[in-house]
Image 1 (spheres, rainbow, N blue to C red):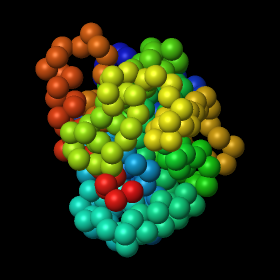
Image 2: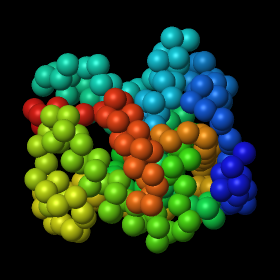
Image 3: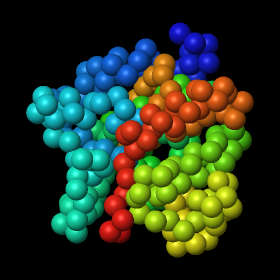
Image 4: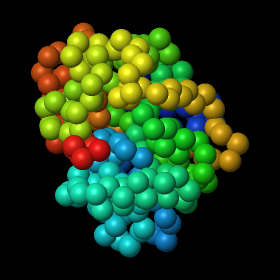
Length: 246
Protein backbone atom coordinates (compact mmCIF):
# COMPACT_ATOMS: atom_id res chain seq x y z
CA UNK A 1 0.00 0.00 0.00
CA UNK A 2 1.22 3.51 -0.81
CA UNK A 3 2.59 5.25 2.30
CA UNK A 4 0.39 8.30 1.73
CA UNK A 5 -2.75 6.16 1.56
CA UNK A 6 -1.72 4.13 4.59
CA UNK A 7 -1.08 7.26 6.66
CA UNK A 8 -4.42 8.76 5.64
CA UNK A 9 -6.29 5.58 6.58
CA UNK A 10 -4.63 5.64 10.03
CA UNK A 11 -5.63 9.26 10.48
CA UNK A 12 -9.24 8.54 9.54
CA UNK A 13 -9.39 5.71 12.07
CA UNK A 14 -7.92 7.95 14.77
CA UNK A 15 -10.97 10.18 14.27
CA UNK A 16 -13.39 7.21 14.65
CA UNK A 17 -14.01 7.18 10.89
CA UNK A 18 -13.69 3.77 9.25
CA UNK A 19 -10.78 3.87 6.81
CA UNK A 20 -10.92 1.07 4.24
CA UNK A 21 -8.39 0.35 1.49
CA UNK A 22 -9.39 -0.86 -1.98
CA UNK A 23 -6.76 -1.85 -4.52
CA UNK A 24 -8.87 -0.86 -7.54
CA UNK A 25 -12.42 -0.07 -8.66
CA UNK A 26 -13.48 -3.72 -8.67
CA UNK A 27 -12.21 -4.18 -5.13
CA UNK A 28 -14.03 -0.99 -4.06
CA UNK A 29 -17.26 -2.20 -5.67
CA UNK A 30 -17.08 -5.54 -3.85
CA UNK A 31 -16.35 -3.85 -0.53
CA UNK A 32 -19.34 -1.54 -0.94
CA UNK A 33 -21.59 -4.48 -1.77
CA UNK A 34 -20.37 -6.28 1.34
CA UNK A 35 -21.11 -3.24 3.51
CA UNK A 36 -24.69 -2.76 2.31
CA UNK A 37 -27.44 -5.27 3.24
CA UNK A 38 -29.43 -6.45 0.24
CA UNK A 39 -32.71 -5.19 1.73
CA UNK A 40 -31.34 -1.70 2.48
CA UNK A 41 -32.50 1.50 0.84
CA UNK A 42 -29.48 3.36 -0.52
CA UNK A 43 -29.49 7.09 -1.22
CA UNK A 44 -26.94 8.42 -3.70
CA UNK A 45 -25.28 11.82 -3.64
CA UNK A 46 -23.94 13.15 -6.92
CA UNK A 47 -20.51 11.55 -7.33
CA UNK A 48 -18.52 10.77 -10.44
CA UNK A 49 -16.30 8.49 -8.35
CA UNK A 50 -19.28 6.34 -7.35
CA UNK A 51 -20.30 6.15 -11.02
CA UNK A 52 -16.78 5.14 -12.01
CA UNK A 53 -16.68 2.14 -9.66
CA UNK A 54 -20.01 0.96 -11.22
CA UNK A 55 -21.56 -0.12 -7.95
CA UNK A 56 -25.03 1.34 -8.47
CA UNK A 57 -25.70 -1.09 -11.27
CA UNK A 58 -24.69 -4.06 -9.11
CA UNK A 59 -26.82 -2.88 -6.19
CA UNK A 60 -29.89 -2.65 -8.42
CA UNK A 61 -29.12 -6.00 -10.05
CA UNK A 62 -29.20 -7.81 -6.71
CA UNK A 63 -32.49 -6.14 -5.73
CA UNK A 64 -31.31 -3.35 -3.42
CA UNK A 65 -33.43 -0.19 -3.58
CA UNK A 66 -31.30 2.67 -4.93
CA UNK A 67 -32.55 6.27 -4.84
CA UNK A 68 -30.43 7.81 -7.58
CA UNK A 69 -31.33 11.16 -9.04
CA UNK A 70 -28.08 11.32 -10.99
CA UNK A 71 -28.51 8.76 -13.76
CA UNK A 72 -26.76 9.85 -16.97
CA UNK A 73 -29.00 7.57 -19.02
CA UNK A 74 -32.13 9.58 -18.25
CA UNK A 75 -33.46 11.63 -21.18
CA UNK A 76 -34.45 14.73 -19.30
CA UNK A 77 -37.76 16.46 -19.76
CA UNK A 78 -39.91 18.27 -17.21
CA UNK A 79 -41.34 15.00 -15.86
CA UNK A 80 -37.88 13.45 -15.49
CA UNK A 81 -36.67 16.54 -13.67
CA UNK A 82 -39.54 16.23 -11.19
CA UNK A 83 -38.41 12.65 -10.55
CA UNK A 84 -34.82 13.84 -10.08
CA UNK A 85 -35.90 16.31 -7.41
CA UNK A 86 -38.06 13.67 -5.70
CA UNK A 87 -35.21 11.14 -5.58
CA UNK A 88 -32.72 13.72 -4.29
CA UNK A 89 -35.09 14.64 -1.49
CA UNK A 90 -35.92 11.04 -0.56
CA UNK A 91 -32.27 10.01 -0.58
CA UNK A 92 -31.56 12.28 2.37
CA UNK A 93 -33.41 9.88 4.70
CA UNK A 94 -32.52 6.23 4.07
CA UNK A 95 -30.50 3.29 5.41
CA UNK A 96 -27.20 4.01 3.68
CA UNK A 97 -25.94 7.13 1.93
CA UNK A 98 -23.37 6.59 -0.83
CA UNK A 99 -21.26 9.37 -2.29
CA UNK A 100 -17.76 10.70 -2.95
CA UNK A 101 -15.64 13.50 -1.50
CA UNK A 102 -13.73 16.45 -2.92
CA UNK A 103 -10.69 16.02 -0.68
CA UNK A 104 -9.38 14.03 2.27
CA UNK A 105 -6.44 15.39 4.22
CA UNK A 106 -3.57 13.23 5.37
CA UNK A 107 -4.61 13.93 8.96
CA UNK A 108 -8.08 12.51 8.31
CA UNK A 109 -10.40 15.43 7.55
CA UNK A 110 -13.04 15.21 4.80
CA UNK A 111 -13.48 18.47 2.90
CA UNK A 112 -16.34 19.15 0.49
CA UNK A 113 -18.20 21.84 -1.42
CA UNK A 114 -21.78 21.61 -2.67
CA UNK A 115 -24.23 23.71 -4.64
CA UNK A 116 -27.53 22.71 -3.03
CA UNK A 117 -26.15 21.04 0.09
CA UNK A 118 -27.95 17.70 -0.23
CA UNK A 119 -24.75 15.73 -0.82
CA UNK A 120 -22.78 17.16 2.08
CA UNK A 121 -25.79 17.01 4.43
CA UNK A 122 -26.24 13.35 3.57
CA UNK A 123 -22.70 12.61 4.64
CA UNK A 124 -23.40 13.27 8.29
CA UNK A 125 -27.16 13.36 8.89
CA UNK A 126 -30.21 11.22 8.15
CA UNK A 127 -28.52 7.83 7.75
CA UNK A 128 -27.14 5.23 10.15
CA UNK A 129 -24.31 4.60 7.69
CA UNK A 130 -22.53 6.74 5.12
CA UNK A 131 -20.09 5.28 2.61
CA UNK A 132 -17.70 7.76 1.00
CA UNK A 133 -15.51 6.59 -1.89
CA UNK A 134 -12.39 8.54 -2.84
CA UNK A 135 -9.60 7.94 -5.33
CA UNK A 136 -5.94 8.32 -4.34
CA UNK A 137 -5.84 11.63 -6.22
CA UNK A 138 -8.19 13.18 -3.64
CA UNK A 139 -5.61 12.93 -0.84
CA UNK A 140 -4.11 16.30 0.10
CA UNK A 141 -1.60 17.34 2.73
CA UNK A 142 -3.77 19.65 4.82
CA UNK A 143 -6.80 21.96 4.86
CA UNK A 144 -4.97 24.72 2.99
CA UNK A 145 -4.23 22.37 0.11
CA UNK A 146 -7.79 21.02 0.21
CA UNK A 147 -9.32 24.46 -0.25
CA UNK A 148 -6.72 25.37 -2.87
CA UNK A 149 -7.65 22.25 -4.87
CA UNK A 150 -11.38 22.87 -4.53
CA UNK A 151 -11.26 26.56 -5.46
CA UNK A 152 -8.53 26.51 -8.10
CA UNK A 153 -8.91 23.09 -9.72
CA UNK A 154 -11.95 21.01 -8.85
CA UNK A 155 -14.83 23.51 -8.89
CA UNK A 156 -13.80 25.59 -11.94
CA UNK A 157 -13.05 22.54 -14.07
CA UNK A 158 -16.16 20.69 -12.89
CA UNK A 159 -18.41 23.59 -13.86
CA UNK A 160 -16.66 24.29 -17.16
CA UNK A 161 -16.60 20.66 -18.29
CA UNK A 162 -20.29 20.11 -17.59
CA UNK A 163 -21.58 23.44 -18.89
CA UNK A 164 -19.26 24.11 -21.83
CA UNK A 165 -17.62 20.91 -23.03
CA UNK A 166 -20.47 18.47 -22.40
CA UNK A 167 -23.43 20.73 -23.17
CA UNK A 168 -25.11 20.81 -19.79
CA UNK A 169 -27.01 23.68 -18.25
CA UNK A 170 -25.40 27.04 -18.99
CA UNK A 171 -23.74 28.51 -15.92
CA UNK A 172 -22.70 32.16 -15.91
CA UNK A 173 -19.96 32.16 -13.31
CA UNK A 174 -16.57 33.88 -13.62
CA UNK A 175 -14.73 30.57 -13.26
CA UNK A 176 -16.21 29.28 -16.52
CA UNK A 177 -14.49 32.12 -18.35
CA UNK A 178 -11.30 32.45 -16.31
CA UNK A 179 -10.74 28.92 -15.00
CA UNK A 180 -10.22 30.29 -11.49
CA UNK A 181 -12.46 30.86 -8.51
CA UNK A 182 -13.39 34.50 -8.01
CA UNK A 183 -15.53 33.97 -4.90
CA UNK A 184 -18.46 35.18 -6.98
CA UNK A 185 -21.87 36.24 -5.72
CA UNK A 186 -23.86 35.52 -8.88
CA UNK A 187 -27.09 33.49 -8.84
CA UNK A 188 -25.42 30.60 -10.68
CA UNK A 189 -22.74 30.18 -8.00
CA UNK A 190 -22.12 26.47 -7.35
CA UNK A 191 -19.77 26.69 -4.35
CA UNK A 192 -22.42 27.55 -1.77
CA UNK A 193 -21.82 25.10 1.07
CA UNK A 194 -18.39 24.09 2.38
CA UNK A 195 -18.06 21.37 5.03
CA UNK A 196 -15.24 19.80 7.01
CA UNK A 197 -15.88 16.49 8.75
CA UNK A 198 -13.33 16.18 11.58
CA UNK A 199 -14.76 13.18 13.41
CA UNK A 200 -17.57 10.67 13.57
CA UNK A 201 -20.99 12.35 13.75
CA UNK A 202 -23.01 11.30 16.80
CA UNK A 203 -25.65 9.35 14.85
CA UNK A 204 -23.85 8.26 11.68
CA UNK A 205 -21.04 5.80 11.03
CA UNK A 206 -18.84 7.02 8.19
CA UNK A 207 -16.89 4.50 6.15
CA UNK A 208 -14.27 6.01 3.85
CA UNK A 209 -13.00 3.75 1.08
CA UNK A 210 -9.73 4.98 -0.43
CA UNK A 211 -9.18 3.43 -3.85
CA UNK A 212 -5.66 3.02 -5.23
CA UNK A 213 -6.74 4.60 -8.53
CA UNK A 214 -7.32 8.12 -9.81
CA UNK A 215 -11.08 8.71 -9.59
CA UNK A 216 -13.23 11.80 -9.79
CA UNK A 217 -11.80 15.23 -10.54
CA UNK A 218 -8.72 16.33 -8.62
CA UNK A 219 -5.02 16.69 -9.22
CA UNK A 220 -1.91 18.56 -8.21
CA UNK A 221 -0.54 21.03 -10.76
CA UNK A 222 2.92 19.41 -10.49
CA UNK A 223 1.72 15.99 -11.68
CA UNK A 224 2.65 14.74 -15.18
CA UNK A 225 0.36 16.14 -17.86
CA UNK A 226 -0.55 12.63 -19.04
CA UNK A 227 -1.91 11.72 -15.62
CA UNK A 228 -3.99 14.90 -15.43
CA UNK A 229 -5.42 14.34 -18.92
CA UNK A 230 -6.39 10.77 -18.01
CA UNK A 231 -8.20 12.01 -14.89
CA UNK A 232 -10.14 14.58 -16.94
CA UNK A 233 -11.06 12.22 -19.78
CA UNK A 234 -12.24 9.47 -17.43
CA UNK A 235 -14.23 12.05 -15.50
CA UNK A 236 -16.02 13.19 -18.68
CA UNK A 237 -17.22 9.65 -19.34
CA UNK A 238 -19.08 9.39 -16.04
CA UNK A 239 -19.94 12.86 -14.71
CA UNK A 240 -23.63 13.63 -14.27
CA UNK A 241 -24.71 16.47 -16.59
CA UNK A 242 -27.60 18.70 -15.45
CA UNK A 243 -29.96 19.19 -18.40
CA UNK A 244 -30.30 22.55 -20.17
CA UNK A 245 -34.02 22.70 -19.23
CA UNK A 246 -33.19 23.90 -15.72
